[in-house]
Length: 320
Image (cartoon, rainbow, N blue to C red; front, side, top):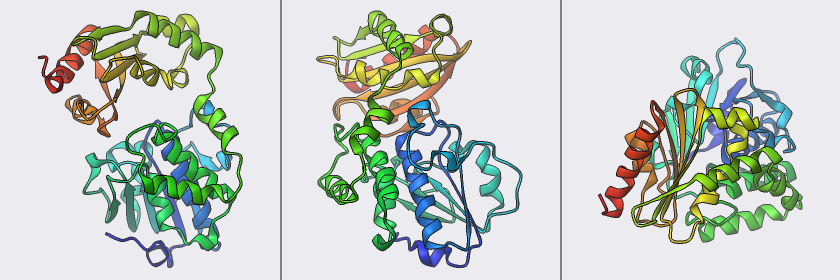
């Protein structure tokens, strides 16, 4: 369905925005860009953004300080907007959504195809939620800050235009955004490519101990709680590891698991072709995402988790 932001929000005095837990570049960029746009479109309204604290790689992006990480008690919102996810993954922001007079869901995940709000705009063909947000904006309100945030969202969810979800339309949108003359190179270096010394050490350990399955078409790497503590690594240091695994020659699917807390494992899954739909694999474990990029969690023994993940991938590869 079409969504007219002006018509849906023109009577609102309070507007809330959120995205998913553990926000990534697309989630952060989409939410911040929408917040900045709505503040220009409706200057008399109060527009607030609620997200979990982003990873340190996003410390230098525009309007970073405008993100509310505390989820304070407050009155009901006239309109509450969920970007890049469904209701189940917005964490503490659920209480704002539950009490809002009107709810809107903007997303591009096929696992949320029907949406989870009163008004839903879900386009699984879009490369990123930021791509959908761009299509909703009155371009007379566009500025360099909004353009940079949307570009960041699209770049992150396409692996800097490397993933197969990059469409001709995606590149046309980004060309339009670049007309606003922001420093896209520095933004991508800071938020996507840069790594700390600790994250490099973690990557080295994962690559060294990674294992191949199914005729070397699946690679799985892991870092347990002990290793994370020994080198002082946190969740922030895990970014990009699964992509390094994925580009191993001959690999169709890559999985990286790390231990968040003793016995609690987080998995990131990536595929290199249509032979493996990692969204379907993630859904088996209560997660999900895109066909080429997804995630899930598991409580228990890591070897059991690895075995089950390998079995699910093997079914798609026809080797189990």
